[in-house]
Every structure is written in C-alpha cells, then in structure tokens.
Length: 242
Image (cartoon, rainbow, N blue to C red; front, side, top):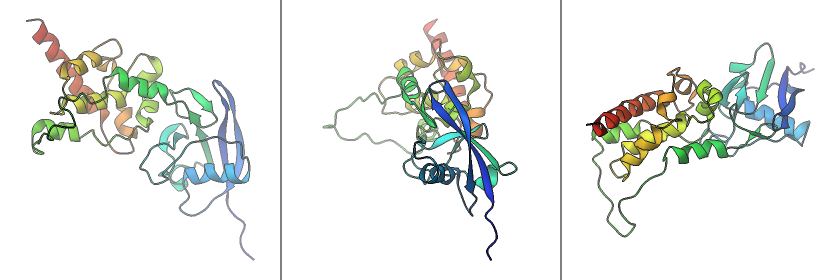
C-alpha cells in the first residue's frame, strides 16, 4: 500500500481591487514542485475561477511574479521546498500594484513609470543609416550592460518600500532602465533622461535600502544604477549653475 500524500496548506488571496481575503486550499506536495505548479494545481483541480498570470514557466518572461510568504518572487523559479513554512504557503498578488482579480495585477502603473523616466530609446539615426559600431570594451557600454537584463517582472517594484510610501516615485526598474540609456552611446537624449529622473519622483527619493537588489531574480542591482543617476544628476545641476 502506498503511503499517503503529504499535503500543503496554501492560502491564496482572492478578490478584486482592494476587496478580498485569503482562501485556503490543500494541495498535494510533489518533488521539485514550484509555487506556480501549486497555483496551477488549485486552478485546474479545485477552483477554475482563480485568476493568475504566467507565460514561459522557465524564468524568461517574469509574468508569474507574485508575493510568496510576503516576499516578491518569480513563482515558476521558486521551489516549494525552499519557502514552505511548516507545510504552509501564502500566495498573494504583487505589492504596490492595483489588483485586477485574485493574483493578477494591473501592470500599467509600473510601465507608466518607465515612460516618466524617459525609459525608451531616443534614436539619432534612421533605419536607412548604417548601424553605429560601439566598442564593447568602452566604460559606458559596460555600465549599460550591467542593467540591460531587466525583463520587467516588477519584483523590485513590489519589494520597494519607497514605492509603497510615495506614489510619485519612479521606482527601481524605471530608474535602472534610465541608467542603461544614459550610458548607451547610441541614445540621443542624455539631457532628457537626466531631467526626467531628477524631478520630484526621481532618483533622489531612493533611501538606498537595497530591497530591489536583494529580490531581483536576475541578480541586477538597481540600487547601483540609482546611485549612478544621483551622481550624474548632481553633476548636471552644478554644471548648469556655472
């Protein structure tokens, strides 16, 4: 006779907007099981109305990010065995973003911050022009490359207490993106980027707590990028004052 399955007690946040509550489910524990596996099992076997978001399941897209036991994580890369506490797991939507339904959040405010930080490329050439060659060993290229692997998962945004306290703050991901553009030799609006990140919601709001770097699944360091922006905006300010 086979032994009985070990069961996980999983509390899942249910609701829309600011109205909701945790609902408990029992889920069989399996070897190499991820949090996304658990959420999918609940939706497929216990409650088909559960809403959540995922795409690639292999840590490439970042769309499955949720709060797991109070911490923002990619659920497809978070194994149950590493986070379960006495056989219990709490799963909730990402912090600092409006909830659409259950575990699915509205990402528009997150991407609006990218727009506010001038986090889009400003071309200096047309597609008819030859591609500009950039030395891969140049100091600016190396600085840009350090933050280029951001995939917009919003884990750092959810981890940031400054975002929680200040709705105007652009947040670590948008500022990290601004830093990569500031160091991109092909970008044509360095002044515009500096102006965008030096305003009331800009880089100087960061308290350097480091949660963004601590929780980034790609091991990026937005806090380092923000420190660079603070330095460059200060230099720009004093240059203008001459």
